[in-house]
Amino acid sequence: MNMHFGLILILLCLTGCPDTEQYAKADDVVDAALEPQDSASTISNDQFTEPTVDQGQPPLDAGVTDARPADTGAFDADAPGDLNVMDDALPSTGDDSGIPEECTIEFDVILPEGTPEEQLYIAGEGFDAAEWEPGIESLALNRQGNRGVLAVTRPHLSRITYKYTRGTWDSVEGTVDCREIENRSLVIDCGTAPISVQDVILNWVDQCSP
Image 1 (spheres, rainbow, N blue to C red):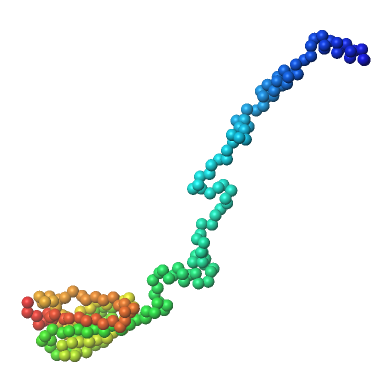
Image 2 (image 1 turned 120 degrees about the vertical axis):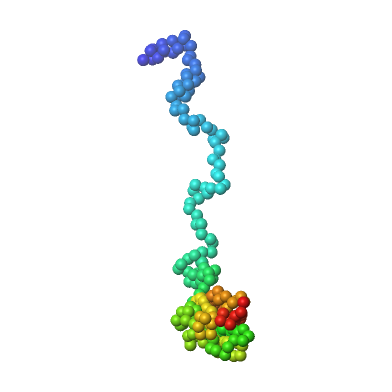
């Protein structure tokens, strides 16, 4: 055994010692050829930089944010009193508005000179009476010299359309040139009650001379 080992040493000395660095370099070449060519694995730590984040977008790990305003009381249906916050911006009607459901309208009409001493009436629609009847007692004006007055009660935001007569359509009020006038019209706004309507009758068609 010792003799064989001695012979090997002699042979090695005669042939020269192997170049271990050459074998090491050869191994590195083999390993490099066998290693997968992944472009990501060839980037050193010094070359790698964190990807930039678009400032207009939240980071991927930021989670879902709450887009509601910080003060959500006005939008929370369960929060006491929040409905009043939203309703304040809207017009309100009804009992809470302070506007009565109906109110009084006072008509005060000036009569033309020479008006006969006859009963005067309002005829039209939107009143609590038959429509466009020229001589209804409930719509008769109280005569006071050259004036006539009448008070009626009507609902809030109702509309009335009317003309004045002396009891017939032949004696309806007229224009300056003796034509029958267009209908008068009024929307009742009880928020401004009491409502006073002042009209002027220019002519009666049966007494007019163009």
